[in-house]
Amino acid sequence: QVQLVESGGGLVQAGGSLRLSCAASGRTDNIYIMGWFRQAPGKERGFVARTTWRGDSTGYADSVKGRFTISRDIAKNTVYLQIDTLKPEDTAVYYCAAWVTGRSRYEYWGQGTQVTVSS
Image (cartoon, rainbow, N blue to C red; front, top):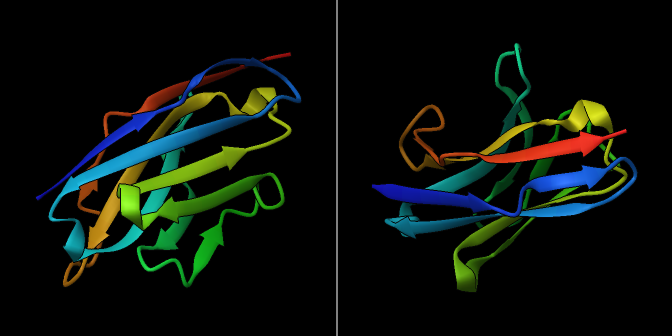
């Protein structure tokens, strides 16, 4: 089992920045990929960014490339999502998720952290 806790969300003006954190605990040695997803009001949850737990590969949704940066600190079992030049359309609940070795999908999810961007 892996437990995930997100933090760092809040209310920010357009053009500002935020850094979201996702602290992992439990069987972190089984984690293969960590991902960030977001769900805006009235929309389905969608992929934002991912990183291998080893940190040797990252990927981003086209809509966030150049503004979002995913990173991780293995010593702290924490994955970060740096969001720059925030736009009102970035308003959403942001979730982190863990894909463990031997599985075919993201299996563990955090409770989410709200990001609200005012224009």
